[in-house]
Image (cartoon, rainbow, N blue to C red):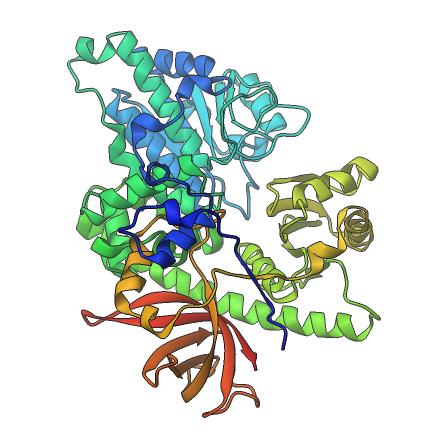
Length: 576
């Protein structure tokens, strides 16, 4: 049988330090690491804030706002990146001497995304701010900025989403992805951009001798890096050297017990070990609980948690978010079953597999369609847009894509050719959001598929299983699992190591409420058993005790009741 795996290419791995294991050297080499220096992470190595276009205007505006004590209001977003950005902005501005700082966050079900006229209408004239600062949004808020300026409110936009040809007429814009920006990386999350603006502002206030005049200590902005790490991982931006530095420094603060009380409470609620917390814990255990607030209720719950300096109160709020997250999982599971039924019906009526999917059910929850699109995309390996009811007569869509298919560019192609079809859209290469009139969904689906046909390549549709190779029986041990877990902040663009191999099955146990997870005992290759977990897998007829399986897995540490052991986490399970 031909192996379905492609092995990551390794170059010059023997030049890496001898004190590292051969496995770790191969893993790092395959990710472009050439020297030990590539894995040293410190703030003084970061690109300077002044390299970012619009930074001078932004910090001048903020410095004026602080020194003249304007009322500053942060316009947040309803996901983890937006919530952490808001918390970073408020905590940093207060440390720098701002006395009137608060925030507003749109409700996805009533206000829409970002700074909109609908959101501004929510601000009463007697509480009107002097300055609005958008975080993780704003680059598409043309009408929102116009409405703010008509009310005499200045606007500073900090964002990282891809801009359209026309930008809002804001007083200042900081976004490394805007045209003409020479900042050396375009991969910062919204919270990373916000952190950079705070670095630039601190330097400006230092030059003005503001801290000495006010007799306040110069802020140590490394105190918000726990928030920066969480938002960066949660937004699944590529972990280039800059982002890995931010995440690594933030994780170090968390592991040392110096996180804010909100993150501490979320870690406790998620039953994670703070001293051993990893980037995957941030992405798969902490962020979903925070995101649940924006998906099912109001992200103010999450932002207030991150701003809390009362651990007991934070733990109470984290427990509430945990309940919301469980509700989200139940809703998502029901929606996924409905979507799979829709797919089965579609495939029965098609001669070949579609290039992409537009899925809609009137009962679907607007806050969960992004997760649904991700699940179906992973299953089908096709671009997917899931829709839910928006405001009257509108549908909200959440798009997820596969490698090689830039989903925002696909939507832009549709919008350019048929401008009447899309009311709004925006996003990234792998994820985007859109709004359209309900009656236009059939026509949009036709044009979406036509745009995919113009842009998609045959090789994009071939799902590739990438592996870091096979491990020997001796390497399947706790020492290597612990070394891999702590070697680097793994994530998008710097993936956690995955291996493959053939194993003899010694024992099979179906677990979970729906028996949709498997706990396997596998022969390591030397007669010794190793536990393997295959989440989301049902037992198939070919999977039998005594038989063999081919699988792709992560070597992981199982930390249960203070007992640590090695285990495999399987994502692909195939017959031999």
